Amino acid sequence: MSLHILIDGYNLIRQSKGLAAMERASLQDGREALLERLASYKRIKHHPITVVFDGTHAHDPLQGRTRYKGINVLFSRPGELADTVIKRLVTRERERAVVVSSDKEITDFAALKGSATMDSLAFENKMAWATQVDPTSGDFGQEDLPGWKPTTKKKGPSRRPPKQKRKSRSRTQKL
Image (cartoon, rainbow, N blue to C red):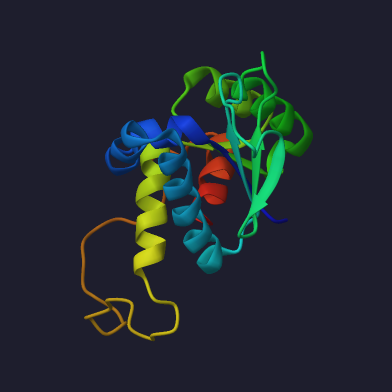
């Protein structure tokens, strides 16, 4: 089952220090910078990505639906919030969706529908990590040789999280 990453675009931009600075200069610059980062992330991870932006105040030729380097870009219709569009996509995708937003209303709705959720800053860190790792090189920072290491640490779950949380965690770890 392939994961489909649904991103609340302006939420991610405004949670990120670097992207927020670009957005303050120009709304279009902030969107383009986010889409460039997502395009480099997609080259490494290959998950389908949909970014949803509020189109209520946007006077942009990209109104509606478009693609940018393999990423689906959606703008909400005038008078409609991006949250509504994301909720509609979550309802359609259900367990396949991983919703990236710091908006509690969206994340609660997604969790209710069975989708995994991830905070915007956590996804930005994953995105930065994935783009820094060069998949063509064999060295991924493994200094120690694999093998048994003596330890007194106990293994096994001391307190197992609920099944829904475990499923959500396993889906977000694939990002």
